[in-house]
Length: 148
Image 1 (cartoon, rainbow, N blue to C red):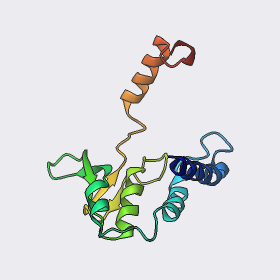
Image 2 (tube, rainbow, N blue to C red; image 1 turned 180 degrees about the vertical axis):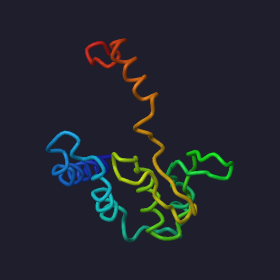
Image 3 (cartoon, rainbow, N blue to C red; image 1 turned 90 degrees about the vertical axis):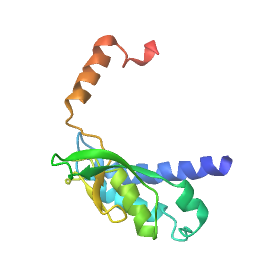
């Protein structure tokens, strides 16, 4: 447990250090987090990860939203990436799962070769529901920490 905590603190410090130049002014991070996350993923995904081992391909799952166009109406459907033949497959899945349109990258999706599809996190920052839910919380005072 202490080794896990220590590693989590190291990762937190790395992310803080890399993101610091982007958060110096309001909305300074918009569409600029992608390259930062690319670098962090290259550093954090171990180069010696045993992808042929039973444990990685049977226990590791990365959740994404896959762009489905087969029904005529494009939709982001829940999917899971669970097969990683090489290190870059794992990196691509992790980066796709962190792609939020305009917040992280200019493009809304990232191509995931193992799925042969475009995928993203599934969060739509322009969803009307996000604004309605936020307003509901503000007006019902759920967002105030003193009432929790």
